[in-house]
Every structure is written in structure tokens, then in C-alpha cells.
Amino acid sequence: MSHQSLPGFREFFPADFAARSHLFEAWRRVAARYGFEEYDGPPLEPLELYTEKSGPEIVGQLYNFTDKGDRQVALRPEMTPTLARMVASRANGLRKPIRWFSIAQMFRYERQQRGRLREHYQLNCDLIGEPGPLGDAEVIALLIDLARELGLGSDDVRVRLSDRRVLAALLRGAGVTEAQLPLAYAAIDKRERMERPALEAMLRGVDGSGMSEPVAARVLEVASLHRLDAVEKALTGVPGGEAALLPLRQTLQALAAMGLDGWVDVDLTIVRGLAYYTGTVFELFDAGKSLRAIAGGGRYDDLLGRLGGVDLPAVGFAMGDVVIGDLLKERGLHPAPTPAVEVFIAGVTDDDLPHVLALAHECRDAGLRTEYALTAQAVGKQLKLADARQARVAVLIGPDDRARNEVQIKDLTAKAQRSVSRTDAVAALLAARS
RNA sequence: GUGGUUGUAGCUCAAUCGGUUAGAGCGCCGGAUUGUGGUUCCGGAGGUUGCGGGUUCGAUCCCCGUCAGCCACCCCA
Image (cartoon, rainbow, N blue to C red):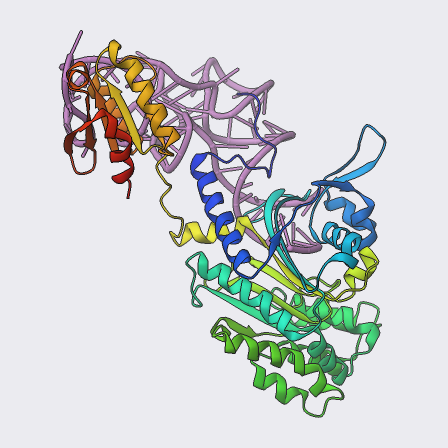
């Protein structure tokens, strides 16, 4: 074989595909429970759709090319710009709040490593048109229920929750200027991956243009705040502190009323990139090993205005299939795949073949997953195939059975066999199904 | 994109110091078994040792390049 798949692109053999389907089905079930409707958009988009939001630097990480019509195009790296365009185009006709989700393949031209490929499937859930904290609580609850649906508990995964409004108030209170906020966010984002002196140097700025030493130290203090009460305490005396805290508190109260607060940790180090988040920011993490974040999201009240020209607040998150898939595999939470065949029909002689075909097709019409041997074989051999397929039931048809207008139904797990009239065969197989 | 590390059968792994025809288990195919499966027994297929070059009488083993996987960085989903 001289051809292999491109680096970072996966092939899904049946067992892999079963695992993927299991994941997608769980995603769809939970999203449906929250009243979310599924949508999709084009996998290939104009390059400008992404450079407008993220600047030309993004091109280095995109799968982009010039098409035969001389258009600059890119395989979608994320769903949000497409979503923004779709919502904007119908914004006046859509009843708010809009609850939409999609399961779509995304592409990124980056060197792959574990949990990070050049393509992946991503669940996007967005709630658009609701500015209040109940909207935030709604999507966070959805995220938690996704984990629950997949068999994960609050000991397995944690939601780490922060709020840009709270963080900004604390940082301003610590003496950080408006212009220095992005730098502070960047440092806080790297807090767990960098040494303290390097972080301080980063905050001070290479040319001394950053913040003073005491301010930098206070920034790092703010970044280490955990739990709501600690955040509340730090906010006392900070101008606008109480107002900034209100949405976060209300979001947590709503989650508590749902009984889901045990999954959530307030953690101000969650910043998520630097761009468009305006309020709540959260990530779902593996509580055990330091895997990458399983999912992440937040409130982005200005983005739809900037991208789609329609001014609607929004909150949402995305979850990729790779990291969660690795985690489920690691925990043994992938269910055993459903056997491809339920009923295997075996003929004894060549003369039985038409009867095998007839019964097989009746079974298939009745919805039974059915197989039979495609070449004439000894009965023992056919049963071997039935066994390898993990079929629950085999049906044997031979000249003797046909003379009595019967078939033999053999339960392959219980090793029991009985004669059933040919007329009742399909009904008997359906009855034995559960 | 940068650095490190690993590549042997479909899968998991052997192969002494550089030495003859690269082995095993699982899986796959066939037979024991022409109206009854799983267990068992017997047999078989399957390899350019990732690829290309170099050193050597001789390379899975040493060297160089390259491709791919993994890890870290970068960046983030």
C-alpha cells in the first residue's frame, strides 16, 4: 500500500465508527432535551470569513487554498462565523432565544499530537438572544448533562467557571489599566504552564512598558482565587465589584437549583484565548490526568454584531470528539458495539437456497438484521459464521423441515433449538428479539 | 513551524555482540466435521524490518536523509 491517510486525518474502522456514533447520539439526545435544534453549514467557506474575525495570522493555521474560480477558500476551523452569518440572515424572523446546535467536522492545519488532530468533529451549542445569567446556566447545565449522559461523574470531570467581568473588575482594582488587560489575561491563561518569575517578567513587559512590580504581583494573586466566597471577599471595596459579581452569582444559584453545582468550580484562571468573550467563561476538564480541556465556551455578547452585523447577545460552547473520546476509552465507557447481525439463516442443501433467500428477505422487511452464507457451505461452517457475527439466533432450513413446512430456530446463546412453522417464523424471531 | 524520541505480520510483541531462510501469541483462511457453532487439534496465507542511501564479507541492529507516530514548544478547538 503506497497510499496512507494524510497526517492528522482519521479513518474510522467499524469499531471506531461505533464509538463515534455512540458519542454523537449522546450529544443529540442531550441537546434535544434542552430544546436545541440541529443545523449545519458549509464545510468550505471564504477565507475572509475567518481573517475578518481573527486577523491574517490565522491563515497559518487554516486549511486554505485557491479554488478553480480563483476564490480564496478555507475548510472551516470553527463554527461560530458560519453560525453568526446564518443567524444574522434570518435574525428578524427567529424567535428568541435561539437554541441551536451542530455536529460538524472542523479542520486546522497544525502539527498533530494526542487529542489534537487536523480534523475533528465538534459539537457546538449556542443560546442566542438572551443576555441574562439563566442563559449561561442553561448551556453550562447542558454541558454537564453531556458528561452525565456519557457515564462521567463529578469526580471524573469538572466545570471550571470564571467571568471576564469579575476578572476585569478585580484587575482594575489591582491597578491594571484598560490597555494592560489583554496582557494580564494572557499571563493568567499561562499561569499553570509557566514559572512565577517568567510570569512576572511577562507582566512587567520586555521593554518596561508593562505594569509595575506590585501590580504584577497583585495580578497573580487575583489569578489564584478559587471559590465564590474568596472572589466575593477580594471584590469588597473594588469599584463596581458587586455589580460585576452578580451574573456569576446568579449563574451559580441557578445551577445549584438544578442540583448541578457540585460539578462546578469557580476558577479565575480560566480565560480561554484572548478574543471575543465578554462575560462568563468556562471549560470542562478531566479531573484526573492533565488532559487537554474537553470543552470550552462562554458569553460573547459583541461577536454576532461584529461578524454578522446583528446585535444579539450569545452564550455557547464547543466540544470536540477527540479528547472526550480518549477519556471515555480510558475509562472503559464505550459500550460494546451492537452485533451487526441478529438472525443468521442457514440452508442445508442447494435446494434450500431459494427458501433461505425468501425468509431472509422477510426478516429484513420486518427490521431484523439478517445474514446468510453467500456460498454453499456445510451447516457447521455456516453456524461458525453466525457465531463470529455474534448473532443471537440461527434459523436452519433443510429438506426435512421443508417437508413439514417448518424451520428450526436455534438460540445460539442458550443452545436451545425448536421447530416453528414456516408461516410463524418471522413472528417467532421478532418475539424472541427482546 | 522548532526540538526530542520511536518505527519489525491486520493487532500486541520477540530476534544474543552486526551473522545463515526475521519468530510467537491473537486474529484471518482451510481441514478434522456433507443437518448443528463457541472449546480442542492439525494445516495455511500473511514481511521490501516505514522508505531511500551509506558503512560492512554480511544490517532489523551502526551512520545520514526522508516520511510517519508519540512528547514538548508554538498556538489553540
